[in-house]
Length: 142
Image 1: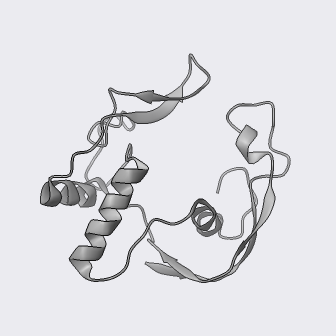
Image 2 (image 1 turned 135 degrees about the vertical axis):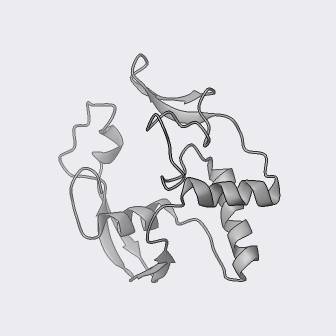
């Protein structure tokens, strides 16, 4: 975990193409204030770490993954993809980040981690995550 100080940042990207479905959401940038410092993981949760949670709790993971669908030109649920078979990369390794994990499943992982360590864990808010990921940058992608 690393400590992220309180501060203000521009969420979104000024000048992003509002007509492109892939960047439309980023085109309406706004100033966001993060009022308190918070801690966030230095890196993503790995597939091995997520597997330990699933095996320890027998947590039943939902079987759909929201992926970019070229034919539709938007994100759509793909029932053939799960955290065990995310599709990218073709051969996912245990040290790769866990992907295709729903908000509910990620929340359950954080609660399990809190019980296991005796320390408070929670998911970051969308603004907290972007603030940390941007680390002061203003590019299209953090």
